[in-house]
Length: 213
Image (cartoon, rainbow, N blue to C red; front, side, top):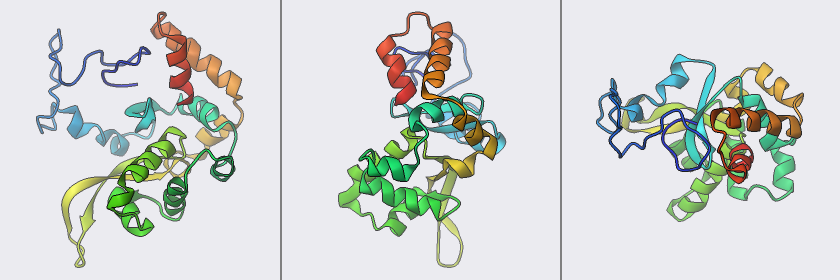
């Protein structure tokens, strides 16, 4: 995980964005300065590196996860099942299915286009947002960058919107292939041991939630 959190597992940064750190740091949250504001550069990593993902993947909050650890969480979260199988088991809503199928048919889509193409309107907001997070937690989709709206004459305008793609398009095949060879039990043991190395006092229930979402 990255950023401050109260989940009792661990974080790279141990202070919250709205608190003053007890040590000297150039980080200044929500200033709009791309040189010092993590909120401005948090998505740049997706364009600059190919070994890290950023998504709402831990405790339904946004965080980074490296390529090295992705297969273990993927194995634990999916348990070897496809989206269609988990949908048939009642694990995902129809809203999630609509979003997932749209992303399967497109390389990447910003949120505003997902809403438009999927026929989602304001009354669907809460269910849409829940479904979007559910799919990220299940590691079926992940953030792929930021994108503006495009006018009829091809000009970009307005606020940037988070874009998503299916996990299989974000990573190359080796990440998915590694996950296939990892059992759920192996994944749980590997992640648990690493968490306890970093935080021997981590709560067991929180570790389980950290692993399985």
